[in-house]
Amino acid sequence: MTERHRHYFDYAASCPPWKEALDAADRCALEFPGNPSAQHEAGRCAQETWETLAQRFTALCKFTNGRLVACSGGTEANNLAIRGVMNRYPAGRLLLAADAHPSAWFATKEYAKRVDILPLEKNGEISPLKLSKMIRKDTLLVSCMHASNETGFVQNIAVLGAACAERKVLFHVDGVQAVGHLPLDLKIVPVNLYAFSVHKFGGPRGFGGLFVRFPDLSPQILGGDQQDGLRAGTENLPGLAGSVAALEQCLARIETEIPRQRELAAELVASVQASFPSVLVNSDSAHGLPGLVSLSFPGIDAQVLIADLDLQGFAVAAGGACHAHRREPSRAILALGRSKREAQGTIRISMGHATRRDEVLALAEVLVQAAARQAALA
Image 1: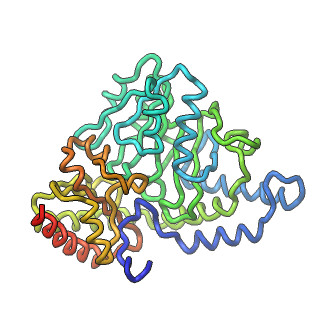
Image 2: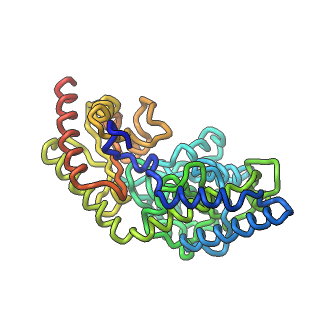
Image 3: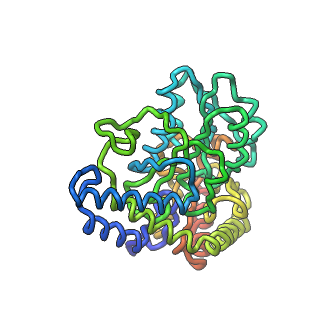
């Protein structure tokens, strides 16, 4: 971090990489320079290492009865899941959660006549009963996030997956915010497609993937038969090595980090509410994604508030990084029942393993002061 941005509160956008992950990626790049598809010894060694690392990564997520398809990140993984199914079965419909990430929401335009929107409850949850009732005879795929990148609400994907399995439809989960931050046992979750992105938990950027239990997908990147023809292109072996190391670091600390970050989030919310009682809380510090806080300041422009905090060395966000520069209100916040005026004043604060309590208390003080200044001008 630079001195100017010494207080980083945007872990949900990108987590600072673990040194162990970068070291593992560097070592792998130097030790295994061969292309895994090559027939010589260097290629065979690279392929064997790829398979070993893939097994280690899937074991860390307790994923069985399927395969890992490595991608460039969460966006490509979600695209592969949705396009892969919708293009393969052009008569099927998609039931898409109202707070879906843009890398899944694209389907509302690309397959406009084949998409139904699954609403959220006021508490941010998806009702399994409502999901089941909305599944039509021609519904093929249900898609939702494991944990929201904007509100941090965590869905019970085991229950939702069971509802999908009962109705015999495929279940896709965007797990980009969950992997490395929440306990994950994909062995017991009836999910067909589960996406992740490594830089969200401290791995090298440019690597992610899709856990696949339904391999009958239409590939989206063509030009080679790598990964059983599901994703062409030379495998990113150093990226996978860094991913394994990063996830190991996260899981080694997860039992202590979850309660610690949730406590910090609760303290931040309580401090802001005490000094600025009109603030609206869109997140759940006790049960949501650890360390993620979403606050709405009605009548205040979130972009101005973020710029004010930025000048004082605090990096926070207006919402998902994919649409941070847009002025329209957040679809995810509106889905909770907030008004446009409330949604436009929403900021997201997200913490990580390096976040300290003194930083959180300092942010609360600076945030309240900045909000009061903007409120006085409104």
